[in-house]
Length: 292
Image (tube, rainbow, N blue to C red; front, side, top):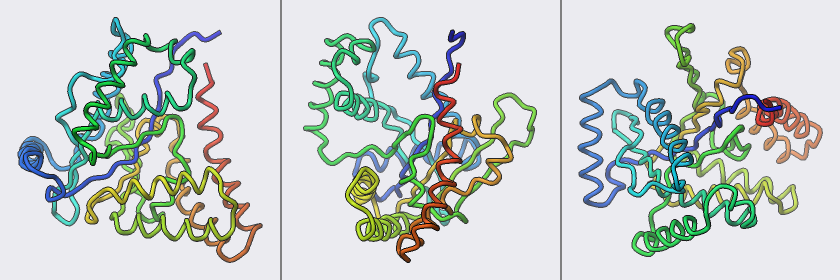
């Protein structure tokens, strides 16, 4: 019998854009935001963890509200901030847009009887109407963040090289919350180049399927952003599920690259071995989703 509720553990794929990518008045607003962040704290000194934790608390409060709120009434005015070669880049949090997008995906994936268990139909209908009205006024705006619960999709690793991996260990290993982080970061131009190469290899060696379709969709999403943007894969809360030794030896991006190289060379055995390593790495993490 389930005796406790385990909070969801999510990873995030984020796009950070330079201020020049944003039209006015957003550009000036984000410039002021960046200056405020720079004044209050050193770059990257916990803003990601703070905003992610706040986001999770707000999501839980929305689900427990009466009636529940599928999406917040107003868009978030916060963003994740980083630097690329001394230039600030911004990833708007876009909480409301991401909630709308997630609801649309759920409507495509689940029948109404399943959705009824989460939200009253009148509430979902209102959220859908709000989204459609907003989309009509903002047809070109895309979410800067994708999230995945309990695992990192294999296609996300295609965007990165193993040497771009960064593991941040907490100053106080015994401290509350741990503070451990694992992320990959790469320039947008590299991410797009790797997607294009992977698609060429997969189309030449595999039949059409979910892997190719998912990578095509990922590539189209990346094309929506500034060419000088930065792409980040943040393991987020998943680091709490992975033992420290396994985090230190995390090599999924390397295995994905090895598999693609083997496929391109016609080496099926080597490609299968790379895939086996990937599935073994993540099967134990995904199994925790159904643990008590």
